[in-house]
Amino acid sequence: MREDLPLDGLLVLDMAQFLSGPSAALRLGDLGARVIKVERPGIGDICRSLYLTDTDIAGDSTLFHAINRNKESIALDYATPADRDFLYRLADRADVVIQNFRPGVADRLGVGPQLLRSRNPRLVIGTISGYGADGPWAGLPGQDLLAQALAGAMWLNGSADDGPVPFGLSIADMLAGHVITEGVLASLVRRGIKGVGAHVETSLLEALVDFQFEVLTTYLNDGGRAPRRAKVRNAHAYLAAPYGVYRTADGWLALAMTPLATLEKMLDVKLKGDAFRDRDRLQFAIAERMVQRDTASWLAHLRTEDIWCAQVMDWPGLLASEAFRRLDLLQPISARNRGMITIKGPVRIDGHRSCHPVGAPHMDQHGSAIRAEFGST
Image (tube, rainbow, N blue to C red; front, side):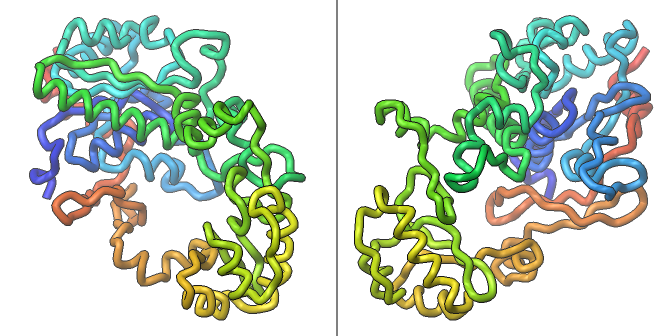
């Protein structure tokens, strides 16, 4: 159904590496665009060898396969005039270019946004940096854990007596990828109306600040009081009891916003006090009660009064659930002459979720064909 997808016919050059930029190019590919990944000869995207675990496929990390499926690969050395000229040839025909060099590097290599757009005014270029194009942090490594540290987000996780707790996901990279995709798509709409391209910019820091906009707004309008994490089963620094995750007799249960009077009746435990100011004491009382029954029993009991609660699932439990199966989120892809399972895009269009069985490419796998197609001299 590729020809039915909204970006069918568009050409995207993925000049990025690691996670943030390539994930944006992946989203555009899932929406139907043709994505050509431009890699450094001999090295390629460093993500190929960035081992998250001891799991790899034919020498490339599983992360690389996950975020570079359904792409073509060509190896170009920007320091070589012939290769740089061919990159210009590709960019002249492209609709979108994705980059995540450190600030100033693309310009020094002769492939910066201003130069590429001067050649192709309809081009939409998306660039992701670590902390913006200038300023005292501009030259720092744009790495996810470091961005989490600088953005203040770690003080929202864990409980009150914990130190800073990082998220267990590369949220800065993934959020920046989504943000740049959003900006690129909006710019493509404008190009369709006005005929002009755009330079879309974001950074890991901006993506994380935006991710915190709700609680940061509270902080900015509350006299600058720092967020106060609950001491018992904290889940949100700005939400009152019972909001949190509680141990049961055989697992864990999440409780969301619920009037204390209703919960008091259902738990048969005294819950008197202010839901926020007395949060620690109240959540301790709830925790003592929740551990006395198993998860299934609590779910059946609490849901009779429409109390917002859910079992805390692990991945095996999630993947085995009927709810997950109905979403149809898994897809097989080919990777180095062997099968691999990965995740489809999260968007359905006209009731269908796109599925592309082609895995991540070998480095320069399509180089000869692309050079022939785009008229290499």
